[in-house]
Length: 376
Image 1 (cartoon, rainbow, N blue to C red):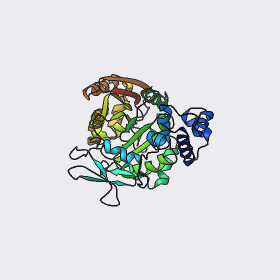
Image 2: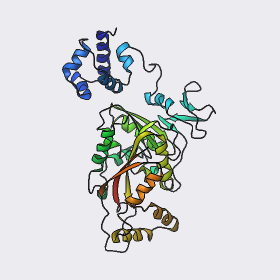
Image 3: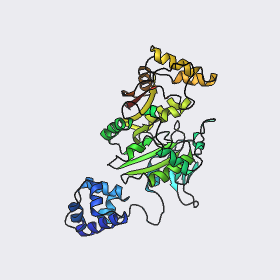
Image 4: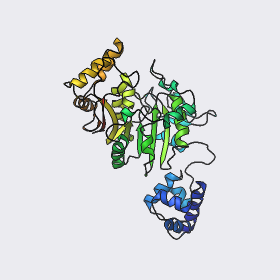
């Protein structure tokens, strides 16, 4: 029989460990302060949904709350998320399952049965990937202070026109209520950042990017300045076009300009998203498109941009130019059966002069859509 008084003591200790008052914990759990007080005095027990929320907020298990069993050995200094990866990681070389080996050295190592090894460095599982030659964007941040500056710097106003992207994305994510989200080619997390603060159910978010140094700073930022106790964060420095993630293990793949940032590997990354998604699950993402191949405005913009780049870049941009109809066709050919789109804003009007006006963020003139694509 469950000892209500002992359960109450454990809930009280967990609350105090987090430096929450009873009212603060009650707010996190969406219950009354009186309910928390009754649990802690042993008068009543939380129901199963509340117990699940408490377990996530307090980084423990339901058994630990009810019976005192340890979820994680207290003598092992390791994030719970790294242990969770034991059920999710596959080797990018041989596709065998990978497990965490803590016996060989002081460094945490994931390895497969073929002895391929990848270290955990600064809390990030490092698959030794490198950014695209000539596109080492992460080097624009020389230190963590400059990384923080990016988070709090106002965004380009051209991306703020039309509907609020974050609200449209939140409407989709909150309806789906995924338990495992993979943020592909996440960068500094500018898209998922606006969703993290709103999440009020237990979620594991796996941030994936080529750059280890950005993920290292992401870990600091999202565990301190942007922490949500409902959200567990995991960081993988790997190739989004060759994800070290088990097939059909993720509830939602999120991308905030991530697919596009993969450039020549964009479609490969999109297909990898399909592979790791569970059946009937979704990818939610934004995408820059042209309004129409028949539109005078679109045609003028495309010609201006192509006249400003070299021959190699022209080839890439010509493949990048898609309208909604063409993109939805790509979605279908990539294995997604249900695809819907929401326009955030249309194209900018063509300028009066004959020179392309943007040196950076060269797609900012294009229309922006939020897409939701479902796996069969």
